[in-house]
Length: 272
Length: 363
Image (cartoon, rainbow over all chains, first blue to last red):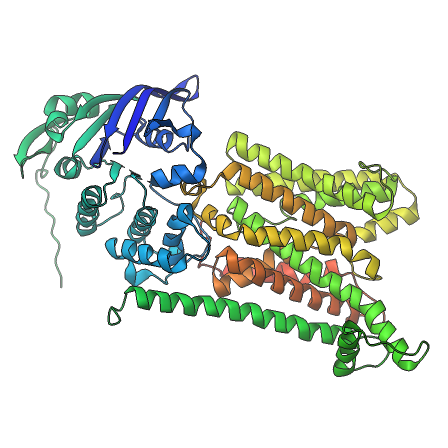
């Protein structure tokens, strides 16, 4: 069973910029975990430390009882996959070649057919099969994101780290993707850890939620344990009302200053 | 499965067709190179046409010998000993600069990176000029090997500066090029400083040497650049799949199992060695490392497994044309191939930058 043990993790870019402090947590088994919290609390930094993209200033990250710093790069890539929020500019590469990159940690001499089987399945899961021969850098932001997720799935890691995987997606694809991530965790025995700003989506599908505030973990547990008015007020500085929908907490933000329509304002829209 | 428009079978069929197209382009470019060799050898001062020149060329390769002093012997001498070395040098340098261009662009994830824009060419040139003008070699070896080693150390300096700065301050691709341009100016200034302190003849020689040329290339000059370009290109080809990983950024490449910093350092050193080997024999030739990969990338995309060999062939063809023009434009005099390469390359490159919207829009 896959296990991540983070002990007393600190990270700082400089002495004045402490990003993470006192992070200690143990995550075990195939499940969907959401990391939530306001902008700039260190969510991305935390997953970068787990995947060794950043080196912690202090503390350790163990994956299956071995420090991530001790893994050979390819061995770590077989354990942990990471899909960033954006991929930036890139040279023209077809979608299928981009997804094929996910096979790099498993690369064997003349393995194209076996790789293609995995790649085709990953593309189908992410609904990008019709884009296979298109150039990756010509796609929309949402299509980009789904291709990058397909690449992460093609990597077949035991732990999949995702930085805002639904940020650029329309509602249907948001639901498809998150349902699929949930399925992945169950059917393929993967621990999926995703950063999300959509508390209700995180609440509905996550097995556990990590709520971060000011570089530390503020609350951790099931959605019922984490998503409540007090936590949201403390972490986001937002008043809210929590109702139960589909057996999960559902957050409705309250804005006391909200004015639905101004006085004496007439406006209309019509199709001539 | 066969009926599924997006099934595995269909995907493999489409992918294989796409791959075949890329291989076909490489074969076509090699065929163009062979034709260009023949056209280039037509200007032989012996009045031999395309077919005759090529038959002397191939006959020499298969070991045909002629009676010393006979017309055939003189023709063979003109084709093989006088003109073939410069044709070979054009191919080696064109292919080498193009492969270095592709690799630098992939390493820095920047389509404007090449040995020239990152200061490697000027660094190598400075090392070589120091050897030619001052007789100073870092290796203590005199002669052409001393020039090569000096060029290597000179080319290594900007490579190391760029690698170190990338590691320490995490430079963006745009800043990397600006650093390269600054280093180019620095080395160029130091070259000028060395040259103004010498006598007029040496100054002229050093100045002309800087503008790349293949004039008077003989067989003795071929082995070093050939070996360096062949070895470096072979390594680059072996690493091409890993180079592809960098196209989605360092974080993605790292999460896919690539030791990004070490990989970048090793390949930059290989590029510096290859560039030094070429520059010290041909002088500076710009734009090949930019134009060849850009043109090829438009045709077959950015997969380095195919982009490297296709760009090498395109670079070789480009320099064969430039060398040919340098010989025929003011015939019987000659222009410098570096000059022709810039005169053709700069407007082509400008046109591509202005027209191109399909990739690299953010750069």
